[in-house]
Each structure stands twice: as structure tokens, then as C-alpha cells.
Image (cartoon, rainbow, N blue to C red):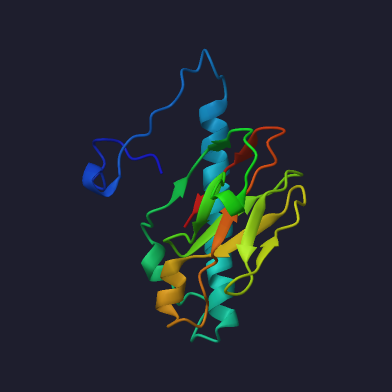
Length: 171
């Protein structure tokens, strides 16, 4: 979220401050495009969290809303090198982990590589379907539900033939 140094929410110790943007001459429309995408994802994430509240049969769909009035959210632009992953040798584009927040949204394309841990030892490929969202549950959701919703352990493998790009939205 863009927070000016004059904004009362400005606090570099909490990663709340202005973003660093590429020069408009080099990448025209990048900033407004990213800001529109960020705003759209914030609305989608809010609705997904409300659907989770309904699915958990909490008192209302707004159950979590008070915790997201000023959420710490991030949109990351990631690029993975075209290096062949080899899990048996410990080579990954991104090693196994879970995300710290409530949910993570990831708009997918035709590029494979994302895997989720199905059980304690079995990794499952997430089918690459263009223009669909993957929703990963985060550690916060697992804690707030006392383990009823498990955070999604996941990793990324690459085939070494091309770069892989990913833009996860952490909410």
C-alpha cells in the first residue's frame, strides 16, 4: 500500500511508507496499472476472508473485518531464473514454506511449477490454469482457527527452459 511520509500511518519500522517506482519514462503506466491491480486484489481478498468466515460458521461474514481495517498487505513481483529444479539434490526455485498472513492470492497462467504439500510426504502439482486464482491459507488463519484451517505448505519447481514470473498478493 502506498503510504506517504506525511500520512499518520507512516512507520518504516512496520514497513509502512512510500513505494519505490520505476521512472515513468522507462515504464509508462506501470504505477497506475500496479495500483489498480493492488486495489482489486484487496477487494477480492476481503471477500475471500468473509467467505472463509461463513464456511467456518462464525457469527457473521464480517467476523474478521475489524482485523483488516489497516492490514499489512504486500504484492510481490517475483522472477525465477531458468534453472532446472532438482528436489533430490535440494535445488528449488523456491523451497517449501507457508505464508505468514491470512491468505495469499496468486493469479495463475500456463506456467507449471507450483506445488502444495498434500500430506506429510506427498507433493502435488497445482494445475496451471490461465486467469484463475490460487488461494493459499496462511499461518495467521491457521492460528486464528486453532488449526481447523491449515496453512498451505508450498514450493516452486522450474523446468530450466524458461523464466517463471509470479505476483503473489499477501493479505
